[in-house]
Amino acid sequence: MLKKSSIGAGVVGLLLLASMPPGMAHEQAKLDADETSGPLDIVVTQHRHRSLGPGTSLIFKIVTYEKWSRDVIAEGGHRFISIELNLDQDSEIERCFVMNTNDSETFGIMYKNCRYFGDEQVGSKDFFPARQLDEHTIRAEFPKRLLGRGVSQYRWRAVTSFEERNQDNPCFAPESPRDGGYGICADFTDWKSHKL
Image 1 (cartoon, helix red, strand yellow):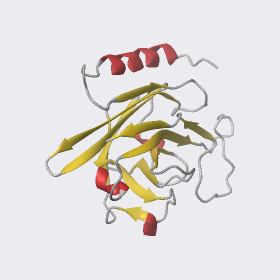
Image 2: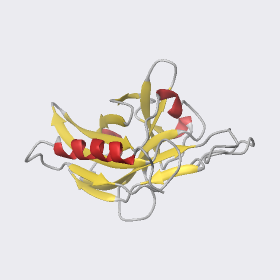
Image 3: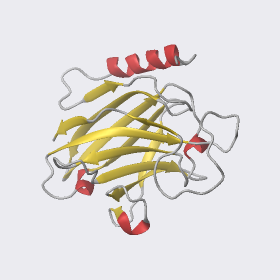
Image 4: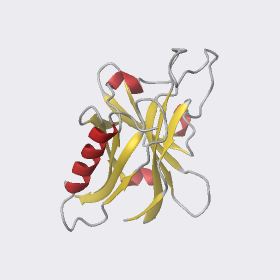
């Protein structure tokens, strides 16, 4: 189903692609199909890394078809945006950088093996800033050290998860609580390889 705002978001995605500096090493941009209901369907993702001082940072941008406000990814539940990272050749996902909001900020937390419990947090319980650049776009940056030692390449994908308690919403979720996992309306980009 083609969304009404897909033309505008497509323009946003093309502008994002056009804004990539020529010759930027290791920069990736990937268009994504229109495939899920809700405000967090992804239109394009962008990823690059940069080395500053003693360390390397990994930078991601995710652009959605629909506009959304910070409360859409309010802390907790099945409403979030995530970067999933596979650090080796198996099918297990070793790291998830999950972005949420609270009353005052947008932030990301890195988890081992995508288990969203406090004792699975990576980075000494650090919260890393994420920023909503506009009504379609979120940007996250975190240090490569969160991936562990010796990682020189990995596969990554962006994931969005959303659900609503409103029965008339296509992303309606029952009242019964569920632990972990994705919301009723989830979007997954294709896996992409990246070398550092």
